[in-house]
Each structure stands twice: as structure tokens, then as C-alpha cells.
Image (tube, rainbow, N blue to C red; front, side):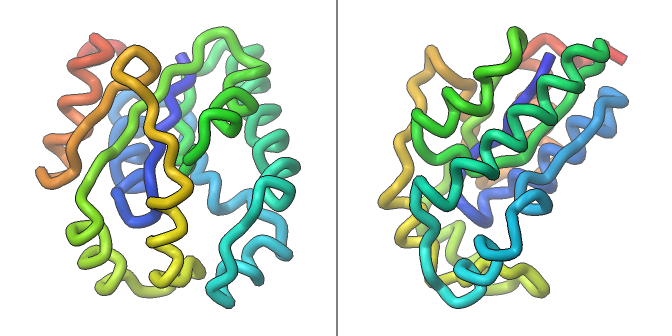
Length: 167
């Protein structure tokens, strides 16, 4: 299975994705680490990315997931995947892609971003992330509220996908 943990910046994608991958012994990928330098520079300056900026990045990620699946490995990708068209690209090269949407209030996420250190994403871009978010339906993704502890959220996701004993 390929599991994509999605949501706006600061919702806990990386933390929760790593917890799940570690528990399952799967590969973990943070989509932020695959942005080209131009995208990082824009975000660092508080400039939102557009669809054109994201296209090669999404294709690169889809290829990465395809390779994991082709080699018979499970993987977790932490990726904003804000728009439906982005999710289509991400799952375009796999057969076993599932999404988890981490959902939190703007106030909760903003408070988390205010305390985050060393990340290139300008907290001012949170408004654009919420504006761009095309939330998946319950049929398209498991939707999990993020006000709990990360360990409890990861456990809930594993339970909902029946992966508790998948190692």
C-alpha cells in the first residue's frame, strides 16, 4: 500500500507519516524534500506556488511512489496534496494509493506554525493553503482531526486501514 498523508502546512503530515512508516517498517518520504530550489525560494519569500510550479514536483513524487510499489514495498508520503488534480497525479502511477486528510482548524494550525523553527514555509502562506484546499470526501480519503496527540492520530489511521498488525 502507498499511503499519502495530506493537509495544509503545519497539520502534522511529517510527524504522523513518520510514526506510521516506522511502525509498519515502510519507507517514508517528505514531499517538502523533493521541491526544486525555485519552489523553496518562492515559499521562503512568502510567495504561494502555482499549479505550474507544482507540476514537475508532483510527477517526481508519483515516480517515487511507483518505484516503491513496483518493488513490492509499502510507503508513506507526507504531501500537502491540496487539490484534487494533485492527488490524481500522485496516484497516477500506482494501484494501491490511499489518502489520509489531516484536518485542523486554522487557529490550531497557525499556533503550531508560530512555534515551528527551521522550516522554509512562511507561516503567512497558511491562508493560501486553506484557500487552495479542495478537501477530499470521506469516500476519497480517511479524514482525521489533528487536535489529539500524534501517537493517537497515527494509531487511529492504522486502525482505520486495518494495519495495526501489518508488520
